[in-house]
Image (cartoon, rainbow, N blue to C red; front, side, top):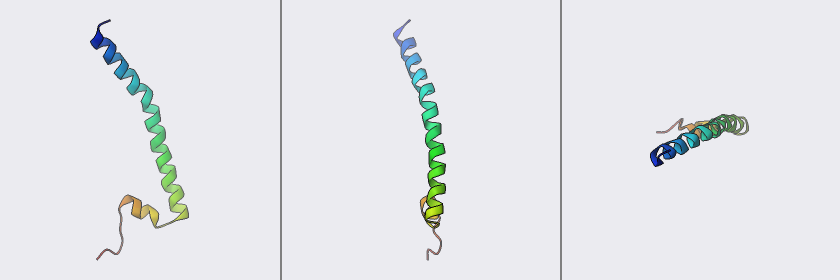
Length: 55
């Protein structure tokens, strides 16, 4: 196995193994926004950049 093939295998393996962690982080973020919206209704608008009443 050449160095390039071994390097490519390691990179591909790390990408495949990190995929589920990224997906869980995205799901966690949706839950966080929902929780913040229930506790502080106007915070979701601030987080997403929707500002009402800016002159």
